[in-house]
Image (cartoon, rainbow, N blue to C red; front, side, top):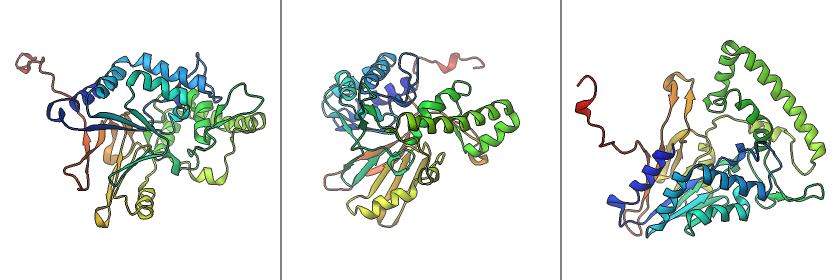
Length: 333
């Protein structure tokens, strides 16, 4: 939805926001580096050189979005905060960050874990899941067998890099259906050959990952019980949000992403949790919201007055009305 995002940035660059101070907070997974290939091949041995190449490929492939981000930061009182997620973990590499900052501008700042301001905490959320939690201290690992330091990917990212990308070549939507268990049952009945083939492939992938553990002992391919419990498709992070609020008295609002599920929860004392959903299409197999969903949702945080608590609301971007379309000349009018 690049065109919609460009409209979104222009809306908050002018009009009633012309004189306002506006900060865009990107809450992780903006660049899907995890599922990108390098020179036509997918690899789990991701180096700083490979990540920088991927970032520059994204820049070249989405010039309208990059131009809009650059124009946004050129305006006075505009800035961008980028919280890193599990799909863009490669932005922990300094050269990869520099490649993005060179084209967008110096007012782009990166946050490895979370971004706090005025009692609001924004974080992607993947660090709460054992299968997605990365080692931020040793984010790159070195060994004589590797010519360059390699990104220390968590287990789920290793699985995506080695296996899921191949499954998505046949069914690109496989990771965009909820609940996933319902999709598996549907596929066994209506897409039986693919479901059985994918099941066998995943089983063999686990065996292959165990073999890779022997070949690459520094990369942790083990699927232990703690990680297995963390394998959840579209989880609810309400409990994690409540824990953050309980352990941090100065925080009154928590905003997550990661789960792709739009959520809002309020507790006593006006403490709030928001999940901003996703700008990706998601197919729901639940009767309450059955069908293809496309909601361009985001959190709007407004500082109404100094020394006052910011107000947060969930909004949906629907775009500008095209004034070039004359409804009176449409068929049937």
